[in-house]
Length: 476
Length: 113
Image (cartoon, rainbow over all chains, first blue to last red; front, side, top):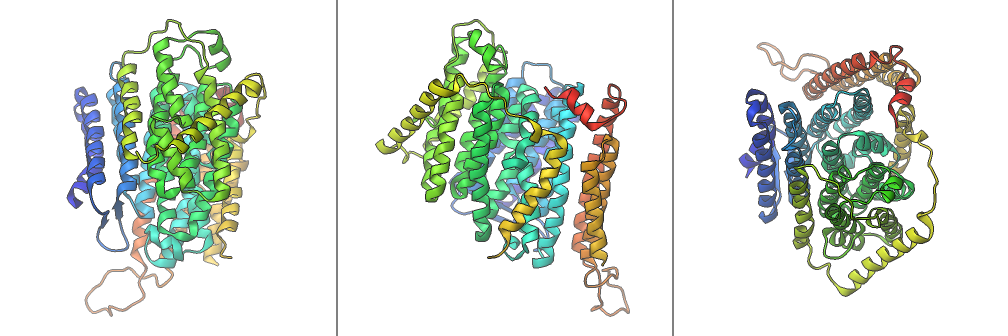
């Protein structure tokens, strides 16, 4: 299993660089990388215990893969495969597929690493590859959005590096477990870096612009998996080091409410989806012990929603109310929207039930509010007029069908959720959300200022968030 | 003392990123910040001694040598920082064609919906 793990981490990079040598094989190599990860993830699910690898000594690379990483890896594999299938009939160059594999490989490495330096390398590589994917159209706007993304994530990672060396100073090792003995400033700096990278709470407000201005497949990839590379280490740290778990959970609840607040008032479909990413990441963080399953549910549904939003006749929700959309696309949109709202029979339901079961009492109330907000904002999609004639792109249906099949199939991971009480509760939440939509939010036209999304403010907020984290991490 | 100076470098870089208007200057400030971080790793490495950690004949084995681990680790970070810097400067070159002044708030205004 150890050799297999190392080979699996190396494979996407190897395949990615091979694409430069054999540009004709680009799509085939890319899809092979995704399939290999899926196979590896299933291997993890049947394995009885976790695999821990310590290369050289306790100073260096530590890897840890178990069921939790299995969920994240499976998400990565499915989303990457769907994006490759979506791009298959287009004339994307070999360079594009090579970068997809780089993202895939680096995110995989982040899901396997259990020390701060391997994680740093994986996150930076994923940042560079994501930068190249965002800037792929080479327009001024795409270059600016990509530059902004790289700048913010790199600045945050510099703080993270300072935090990492503080952990080393305290425990002579870079592994996650050393966080328990680390001083509060180390926790503050490392978490600030990860919160920015993962797009959580106020530090995550770079995310809406980046994810909404990228091309459709790139948005799906970014929202589906790249942000999870920043969230996974937070979940892992919360599980390994008890002292930091409350911090992670509080930020989870905060981001769930903040994201949903913006999303409910948003009038642009892609921006609304991006704000929902900010919000749904909160559900992953709020209950770290079951975060993996929620990450799978969210990755599948969000990437399918982004692919579908790319096939709608307009991005503006107001214009969409005038233009009827194709009935088949509408059905796919409704399935995905119901899943993210937590409707039974779809994986979003099981994931929400499992998350809520693992929450404390005050968190449950906040998360239910966030769930109602989710239902409100996705009512905007569900009640769009249908019957129009729009042709989807050729790669659209296979990719979306793969993701939707995943949404139904992943129910197998959690069949115990299907009790009458849970189902009634889920339907009640959706009912409350939809009635609130019809009574209030359908007519509101509040436009929130976008000041917090400006570059200077995003960088400035890093200092505030690290102060806040420092204060939270102080031993009481 | 040394630690304080190194951290001051990090903060100079960080505030430069916020307060400088020109995009090139912002990137240079980020480089200053990363120089500070790298120097901090070197400071941490030398907290128990600063001799080269190589055992040679005729020398006492138990001498105060610098910790090689942070130095090895920071090499990776230097390479990554350098490649990111290169990518950023290339994109600034592209942006400079349409925004010759390179003021970041102007570019931001032109390129956000």
